[in-house]
Amino acid sequence: MSTAKINFLKPEVLASISSLELRARAVVEGFLSGLHRSPFKGFSVEFAEYRQYTPGDDPRGIDWKVYGRTDKYYVKEFEEETNLNCYFLLDLSNSMTYASGAVSKLTYATWLIASLGYLMLRQRDSSGLITFTDKIETHIPAALKTSHLYTMFAALEKAQPGARTDLGNPLHQVADSLGSKGLLILISDCLDKPEKLLDALQHFRFRGHDVILFHVMDDAELTFPFYNSTRFVGLEGEGTFAAVPKDVKQGYLERLNKHMAEIRAGCGLQRVDYKLLNTSTPLDFALQAYLAARAGKM
Image 1 (cartoon, one colour):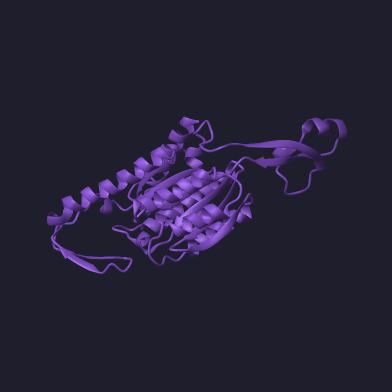
Image 2 (image 1 turned 90 degrees about the horizontal axis):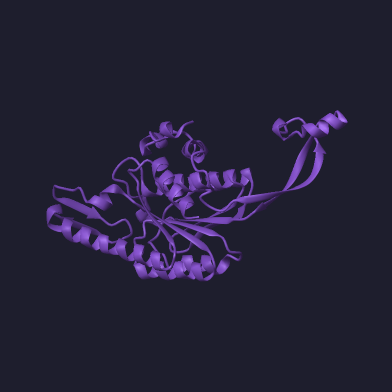
């Protein structure tokens, strides 16, 4: 599948694919070949021993030189050494369910995690999943197995949003619970006080983790395209607010841009990769641009 073809994978197209695995494959396989360097860390393998070929083994692993000497089929066994443990941290607060179109922020986030999880498996790096609301909801330790990736997919498909946003306590608990250094990929709409988020990110960095923040927002949240008198309903118990959009749009956008600028600047100071993702943007396009840029920094 070529990169040109999968650039047509708009959110509504991905939504029509029947499983998270297929969505991940569609997003990743098309653009991976275009990245000449890994966007994360690589892996290494060391030769361990030969073993006799058995039905079901990949024929490409047959050592033909050994076959020429012994007239028997042998494949090489390797000791795999992963250089990276990656954890995906998913915000399940109720604000993530917002969708002005067909795709919610939470759905877009699950596609993102599935795609990057599939990419990690392809490059032989371990991945795990932690979901949280105002507390940790799910903790799947990092591992390097195809079956483990399916376990993560199943957890993502069953993920239920709830409670209010809290980017403080659960993320500090994660920082305290993870032992070895690794890559932490946080996916959230960041609708909390910036100082709480930045304090948690600083905790991650203090522990020696590499951190990426994917700030997932709906297009309507970013542009406020409302015209007629509208009643806005808070998704986390804030109540309702009736307004004429043209009277509040400028103030809303100013506060939003200030909020986002503070988060972006704080990430820069702490050397945390920050990427804003708009749910109306095709995921393959957004990831291709980000991963290529990240690979170029290495």
